[in-house]
Image (cartoon, rainbow, N blue to C red; front, side, top):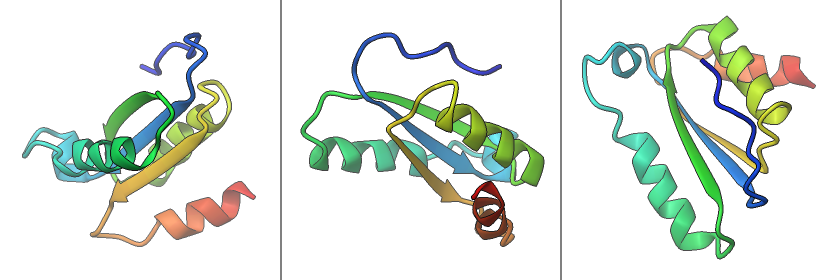
Length: 96
């Protein structure tokens, strides 16, 4: 389920981990929380961070990117993971 719209007035930052195994619970996503930790060190503004771990499937990635870019009104979307396949670049190109 997609998260509710950010109404806090603070910038929304989405961190999207793309991993088949982590999304299935084979192991815990460690990269997403680490990305948030680094962003909090570098971004002085108090932001609302939303982490999501999804499978490496084009349709799912596209749906989440569209959600964060539009409904969630994310100021920044960071993706991590997806090391097994090279679909992310093609998806970003298709968004333009």
